[in-house]
Image (cartoon, rainbow, N blue to C red; front, side, top):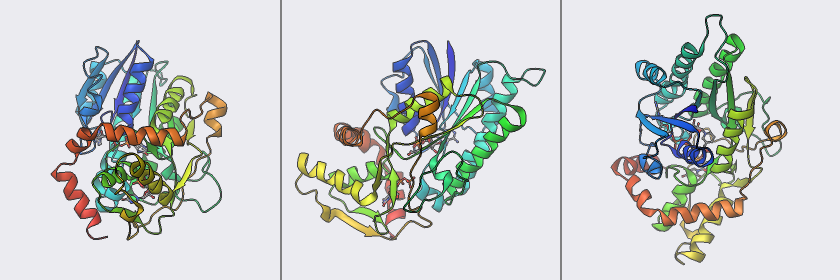
Length: 352
Ligand code: NAD
Ligand code: TYD
């Protein structure tokens, strides 16, 4: 039985990954280690929390003792590191925690895994692997043309993307220096169930349902390449099972949308299916994000060629199912909209 240490498994993608893996495999054990920051939510896991092959540990990935203890207690085969501060706007407001969690936390995890998996001769136990879940944002911003490939130079701009790029470099250095078995995945923007409503899609859905202004940064023409979260989970699984150590894989949906197109799609669905008062009049152009990356778009040829990955979920069905999920899970959303979220919202949007 393979043992997975999934960090950040109470967040958006991590929790979707745990659901995906426990549905697909019945001969694995998952330890979900999460610090339960504002973005971590155990409600995302209620369906599987009682499974015999699942265990939750509350800990900070940058806590040396706590991470060592997990490696002592379990014979971990794979680390899948989702744990991170993940929101660009928050990184602009408070960059320090991004360095602590995303850079130092990742280094701490790497060291614990290396100590545990290293043999006396400097090789590593067979079959072990460390997967760093990174982002296309490490490549910076594209103009109208072109796609990010794995050889595009790193050129991150926000404190968030810079901290992720720093972590990528440290992870890569452990392969280059020690031949420590790692893979890095760099995925484009994800959407789907369980996403925290500070991010664009759940924020827009929530504001529409409450007939609140929809804050659109700048001219609304920034482009993101949206991928349904389960297709990202499938890619990570393929990388764990099939990728050679040291390889880096981009993951993207060939699904570029401007922010204004995205917002209009959500408004149209909710107008037609929920409330006729939900109209484009809710769209409010606000001051642009500082250093706002213009366009992200991914070339995923390598993971398709090497591992046979391709997205299964089309944008049309993915966005419809996602909106439906938020409609059917309004209690989940309400539980998150606590005082601390409201305070964040005021701080971020009041001055825009
Ligand atoms: P998220 O913010 O929803 O979840 C992050 C999780 O990490 C939360 O459960 C949080 O409690 C936990 N966490 C934060 N700090 C921690 C710490 N110090 N120790 C342990 N746990 C901690 O983020 P997400 O959107 O699910 O992203 C997950 C990963 O995927 C991140 O590494 C992110 O960079 C990467 N990624 C995200 C996207 C996207 O579109 N959301 C795209 C590509 C890559
Ligand atoms: P976001 O979901 O924060 O992801 P990222 O910045 O990591 O791509 O934002 C997606 C896009 O939506 C991005 O171009 C910023 C824009 N945006 C808005 O226009 N208004 C908002 O309130 C938010 C949160 C994002």
